[in-house]
Amino acid sequence: MYKFLFVGLALSLITNLLPAQETAEKAREITSNLEKIENLIDKTVKELREAVEQLNRIAAESDKPRDAFEDYTDQLKDYKGVQEDLSDRIDHFRKIADQRFKDWEADLAKMEGDLKNISQERMNKAKKQYEEVDKKVRTIGAKLTKAVDKLQEVQTYFTTELNAASIQAAGKVTDAAKKSADDVMQALEEMKSDYKQLKADTAESRPKE
Image 1 (cartoon, one colour):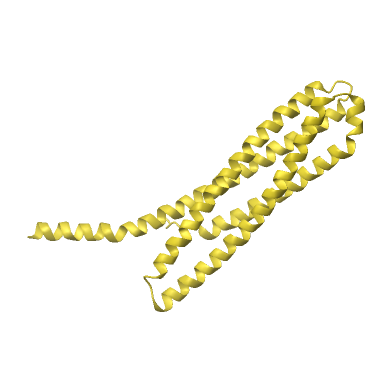
Image 2: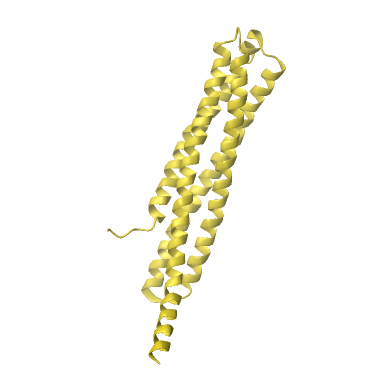
């Protein structure tokens, strides 16, 4: 008889603990994804900065620009690869965040009174913060695409003609492309700061050991 009571108690504890464990796992997953996004933003900025540096080399070495142009082409390819990884990770995080809010809504339906009101208020605040950040991220994403298009256009131009005269003729266009890249790098740094704040606000607190 006692054996069955203990088994029943154990099953009850496991059943009651699972939702808390799942919530903790989801919180850790959100934190992990935000950390990955931060790292990919750093890599994206690094690769973009190096692409601009190689573009500067083309003008600086206009008497023999071939090596600089090939390095620029390779660097632009590396940058686009990292940017794609960042975009995929952000899309993945959106799915996780959307599911988190759906789970939160389901939990609210199981509560009532003051605790429900407190949780509702916290969810509304978190959702608003997330939506504001995501709106900014989408705007930056559009700028990022535009900047890449400009850099790619410069690369295509130099593929057709690469000499001192063609480099000088394209000076204004290449300067505009570099300015667009600089603006994006600054926007990416701001985006990283926003994601870092999200991580601070959503990370699960760990008890002191």
